[in-house]
Image (cartoon, rainbow, N blue to C red; front, side, top):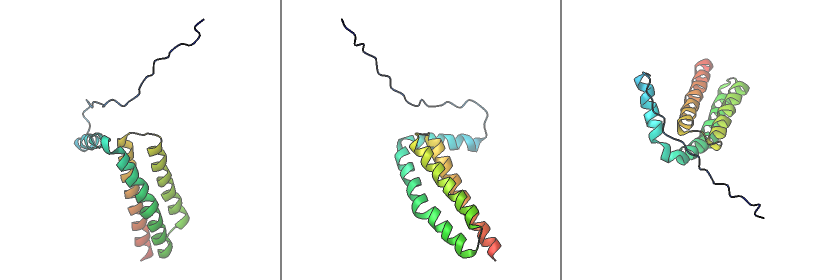
Length: 121
């Protein structure tokens, strides 16, 4: 009475996506760059984690608070961007998503600080 059955193990992986549309040239260059960074996905995760937790969130909070900007609104947005990066990286999102969220976060933090500097003057 053989009741044990062997189940073959499957491996999952990401296959490269071929772009055949007539997308704008800068978008295709971004996708090519992001796909070329796939071997460095862990490094992107580490840079994103360190940049957010050590520089972007604390420094933007201090600058916005000291300049009298909208602290709660910008702190909420900053923390939302931080957690979006963490969740995307820990859930195994593609490197395209990781790089996009990281640079979106950089642009948003620069915008928040710029807005505060312009309204404080």
